[in-house]
Each structure stands twice: as structure tokens, then as C-alpha cells.
Amino acid sequence: MLAKQAKVLSPAQVQTVLAMIGNQRHPSRNRLIFLLSIRAGLRAKEIASLTWAMVTDAEGHIGDCIRLPNQAAKGQSGGVIPMARELRAAVVAHAEQSSPFGLSDRVIQTERSKMTTAQVIVNLFRSWFQALGFDGCSSHSGRRTFITRAARNIGRFGGSLRDVQALARHRSLATTQRYIEIDAEAMRKVVDA
Image (cartoon, rainbow, N blue to C red):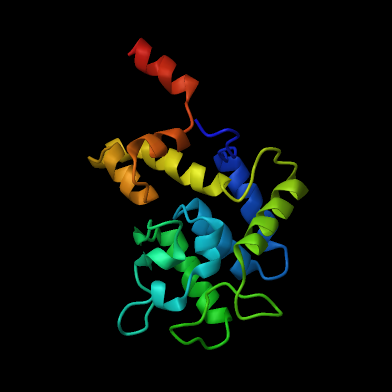
């Protein structure tokens, strides 16, 4: 079991973060950072390493998936992650507000640099969650939320926990299972059914 896991965000908390981000400096960039975590399950390192080439097709248009190479991921956990419509729209909006980009440029940049680091992403999430009083939340909360939601919904689409494992890019199904938050209410309903 993971020693101290980041908390999973409720739908209301997700909306609260998005509302706060919308009123800060760099709203399109920060919305994209948050959605890359909550809607694609990317880690801080992966968000910081994301280049335009990873989110565009062969013609340079924003694609419908993220092609994450192993060197941008944790360990050898690269892969192809489908983009939710909301996330793709955020990528498009951010591209429209960014300076012209080449295919090797980083998607997430700062005012002082054309790239960022995983630690900057971690600190950004920490500042958002501290400002909102979301104790126990961290940059990994979005990933845990993504994996938990995927596990709860995958059966509706004919999928299984192995599909969630592939989305999470985990080598072991046991690792994926540790990310999934237990839902006591769902357990009661299953027992009563």
C-alpha cells in the first residue's frame, strides 16, 4: 500500500479549482496543467516535459491523443493517452494564446523560461490546494482522481480494470488498484442489490 496517498478530488473540488484558476494570471496555461492531471492522469514530470509534438498530428494540428515517449514519463511508462474533449479544447485554447510554437517546444512555459520543471508543477498544485484549504491534496491528486474515475466508469463502456491499467500506464495491475479510492456507498449498494 502507498504510505500516504494524495486525496482524490470530488467533482465539486474540481470545479472549485477550475473557477479559481480562471481568475488568476495565465488562466489558459493553468487550466491546461490542471486538466492534464485530472483528465489524462499525467504526473508533474510528464506535464513539465510535454512538447507540442506530443499533442499534434503529422500535419501540426492538435490531435486527439497525447503520445508520451518513455523519456518524458516515469520509468518506461510512456504511451498513448486519449484526450478527453475538455482537455483537447484546453490544448487548442492554450495553443491559440501561446506564442508561435515549433514541434520541439514545451507546451508549458513560464514567464522567464521556455520550459518548466516537475518541481514548478508540484509547487503550483500545492499553492492552489493550500489557497483552497484542500488538505491532503497534491499534484498527484489529479492522477488518483483520473484513475479512480476511470475504474468506476470503465464497465459502462465494456472495459475492464486492465484497460484502466493501460490508461494509467502501470506495469502492474496491483499498482493501479492501489490508486483507486474505495467507495463505501458503492459497496453498500452492491451488497443490497
